[in-house]
Amino acid sequence: MKPIWIVDDDASIRWVLEKALARENLETRSFANARDAMTAFETDTPQVLVSDIRMPGESGIDLLQAVKERHPGLPVIIITAFSDLDSAVASFQGGAFDYLAKPFDIDKAVALIRRALEESLREASVEAPPAETPEILGLAPAMQEVFRAIGRLSQSNVTVLITGESGTGKELVASALHKHSPRAQQPFIALNTAAIPKDLLESELFGHERGAFTGAQAMRRGRFEQAENGTLFLDEIGDMPFDLQTRLLRVLSDGHFYRVGGHQPVKANVRVIAATHQNLEQRVRDGLFREDLFHRLNVIRLRLPSLRERREDIPLLARHFLVQSAHQLGVEPKRMSDSAMRFLSGLELPGNVRQLENLCNWITVMAPGQTVEIKDLPRDLTQGQGNGSAVPVQPAFAEGGVPAPAALAVPPSPDGWIGLLELQAASMLSAGQFEVMDTLGKQFESALIKTALKHTHGRKNDAAMRLGIGRNTITRKIVELGIDGAREE
Image (cartoon, rainbow, N blue to C red; front, side, top):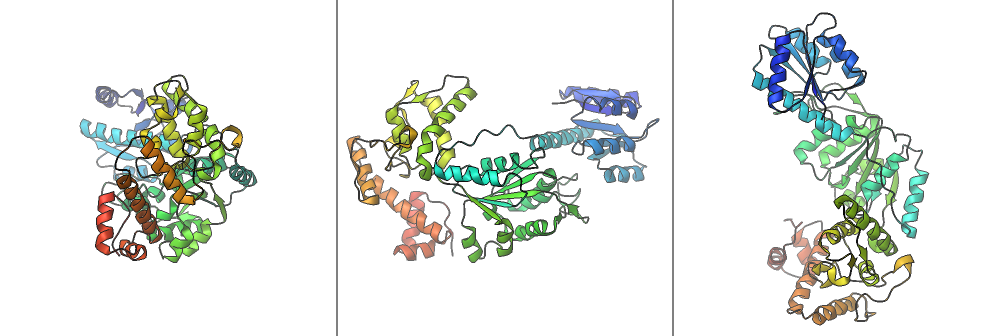
């Protein structure tokens, strides 16, 4: 963390602030005038700048203006007198974070500097140039289509809508689109709209003015301003509240927006890339997503394949994640035996690439030997526990995309999902498990109810009617099976 700079011609104020911040283990650097601070800016920058407003020579306002031209995100706290209201107003007009009125309480001054410090660190983590994006791995034809699309879009600023199941790598593709675009040297800002509470999402996107709501103690730039001249990635756009969809549509239409509590329009030069795992056309039909916004976003659609559609890539991805995980932990990479790799390539992996990466992290930490066998994998994969999503399916692929022998000793049945059910039951019985009927029955019921709820958008009464069961029955099953996502009509 960089030091806090204190600029004041009064040596006693510099001394008091230095000592108070030192007690907080915060490093400081002091200047007796604005000119010396401006000179220091040529070779260094602070984390926070605290400056008196009236000094011999250049004033604190002059310093504020010079700093904001070159470092707009740097928090600046202006020290002024109680009676100097005009100076305080000028400070905020110039973009100051806040001001300290003399004589000030030292504890309150430290608390204010800490708030500015937190803001500075948060801004730095957002605005720092993205780390070098790892190569997107994939040899499957479906991934080659994705690579070709990224190449065709490399010199375009067109809006892109990325669709695909959770865990398929939508943010990684968005980052690649930015990296290979004319905006590559500008910020790439990502925001998961489903992860931000509805009441905070508007401020998160568009920023807010000081005093816009309780707790808004300073003006804050939103993600659109942070991404200026760069790319804004809006993940899970299908979950955006309906009223905010209107504001987003306005930005995409005319390139302007207002901060929360603001009255002056702010111009946005931002390329928007959106992503969702949901069916936006269906959400439009259900009245949950604006049709005009959908058409604004759906200029170019890029669909990412699930891992089930690119099984030949699983060995390549697994080896990459094992090496990556080992490097992070400072250990030797583990390797999968041929039989374990074939077994892994035959799993459903509903969490897609993200689930595979997490599994490789687990293997690096938990697997006992350097060569990983099937028996070393998590029990819920090898013994069919959990929700049944890890049932091996055929065909599995060995290295190079060649169909491999069955991962289990029991030959698969050709009868579709019934054959898979038989395969799973045989595996569990061979492993000496008990209560197989109860275990598979619960998994079967859970899969049916979850699918019905997804089809009816969580409306459990409608789901019960379509499944041919009673309302009380589905309510009881949802509780017993621990199913989320259901709601009343």
